[in-house]
Image (cartoon, rainbow, N blue to C red; front, side, top):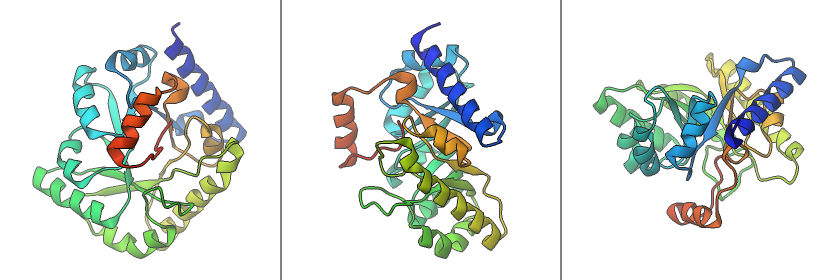
Length: 246
């Protein structure tokens, strides 16, 4: 068994333990293997180990990489989506984790209508109010939910968050609880179902599973650390460093 296969097995075991601890079934949690900056041959090793669901955070990289890989694979978009990349992104991804504003959702709806598509998405919530991160403020989600739900081409399936980087995984728990409680409140207030919670990365995904995550975004624990050059490239492309998965 290769290194990537061993890493995937280890991550899945941790998910299973965390789910059991919380009284949840393991198959209620999907592992999104984040392939940002990792070449197609590395992804193939994960495919050979049985992984089928992957995540990318840059449309340009995904457009080059996805055609090199088996067409049966599933792809999620987890990074900040620029409006001028929506048209390219829509055909590539089955789920968008990071719709972070009403304006972005409206533009996505407009382009989806032109293309005859029905995108599925999650709303990104900036649970800690960090200035360096994108996302709806929790209060803004409530005030803009009716406008979001009125966009006929979009299917809103849940929420996503990126908590502040913590030294210990336990430091993320309160933010995962906040996201879950916000989801529960929105479901009740607007009489809808938001079954998906995307939360948890390499440093804290077991805690996220304990608190109700249905999607965990794990890259480093599977593919290893990105080089300083790769991290700097990601920072330069976005103008600042934004960790959407690890």
